Image (cartoon, rainbow, N blue to C red; front, top):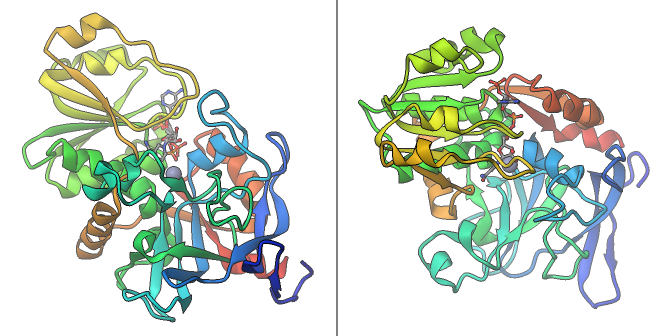
Length: 370
Ligand code: NAP
Ligand code: ZN
């Protein structure tokens, strides 16, 4: 699509009405993201069409763009990443009741699910075996082979998977709540993190800094484990009560058997046993980071203290809406570096080096000049 050209409605072979919109996409695991035109379906009865204003850059975007999860979740190219989406409603289908044109709206990691399995019925669409993720999932509407994410001008999503956005929050900092926010909020709620608990957050990145904000807001004594001593002041400013440099064995040892709950957000291979040893009796470590290789688990670190390790994957739609409400009430947003889409490849390089404070948020107005 050329500069200034408006997306044109077009009818494709299957008899479905679609339009073209601008996006950034990677053609292979080693290619940079570049400007392309992609198809989106015209809104159907239950659909909401959103003009995307900001989209966060999650480390999952990077894992998927580079096919780092190829053994479990291979990437189909071209890929348009992005699942931390905030924007304004431009059109709604005839059966839509919660949104009207002009409303703020958000979309996270899912755009569909079967809505009939026990997990969906329990509001846990994030654990639906037939969930459609916002990018790199087969597109059941047939608009394209796979779903295309939020590095784009607009998106069309079933109303059930569209969230309302509190109107008092900065929009660039709200986008990351849709993944980094809910992924850290949900396990803390599930494990009952509350006042008086001692809670650890491993890794002060996009997820980690949200984990610190939530643990602090829930009233827990919050400890950050970081490999980057230079992040100490930021961690304290974000709400941590203490900061431990995880490469310092003595500092680690001084916290032995004292934590109720630890959230592990690390995206690369690391030793989780040194953190398990810091849990008290019946303490839990929940993994949300997704390194491409399996982690080694010491039986001793688990059996001594009846400790447990769990995982957690984003959160259901109702809980995501609850989280956004909580953020509106407590004025919580992500600390973001706002960038134009043209800097996305540079941002990926920096994210891989943990060089971001603490989430990139793409100002999608920059896509208009492509
Ligand atoms: P991120 O911003 O890169 O944060 C990861 C943090 O891990 C870094 O900032 C760094 O913090 C720490 N780290 C880096 N290298 C390390 C090492 N060698 N040893 C220990 N810590 C290290 O990434 P993110 O966007 O928060 O995502 C984190 C992970 O969660 C990714 O794998 C992503 O795919 C996954 N994720 C999972 C879900 C889910 O639903 N479960 C949802 C979203 C993302 P320090 O500098 O403080 O050490
Ligand atoms: Zn994410």
